[in-house]
Amino acid sequence: MRAKELRERTDEELKNLLVDAKNNLFQSRIKNATHQLTDSSQIKKNRREIARINTILGERSDSAKQE
Image 1 (cartoon, rainbow, N blue to C red):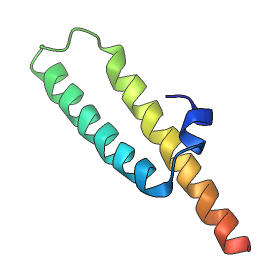
Image 2: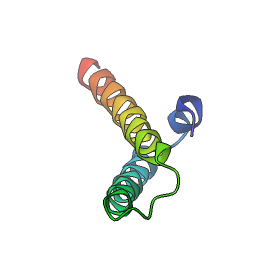
Image 3: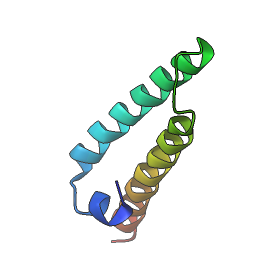
């Protein structure tokens, strides 16, 4: 999901997406360790998705502190 699409979501939705992304990353790592992962780029994609979500949540918390 793109950052623009993520910014349109609420904090609760972002937190749920973050949990899902972390679970997907964990599952991808397990599959990679057992040689069942067919697309190894999934690990990198999951890590970037987690970073995007954390960045947006961080921006929102910083702006809330400034107000």
